[in-house]
Image 1 (tube, helix red, strand yellow):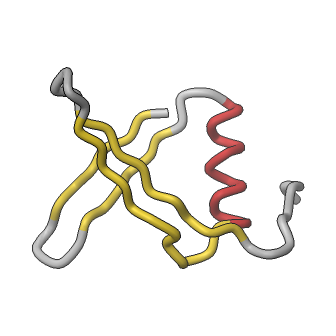
Image 2 (image 1 turned 180 degrees about the horizontal axis):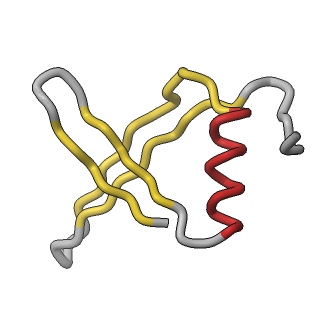
Length: 68
């Protein structure tokens, strides 16, 4: 999966592009089961100078696991 972070005047955009069929399925499940509720945004700075981050998106209470 390729991720790109864009910054605009009023928001950030995390753009994702699937590179495999499994990743495409993950994006489809994100669309079907993800809510608009953010559970957390995290950024880590390690002692070796590397930075990493994550965004946690809440899932719907009843997951949909099939594509129709």
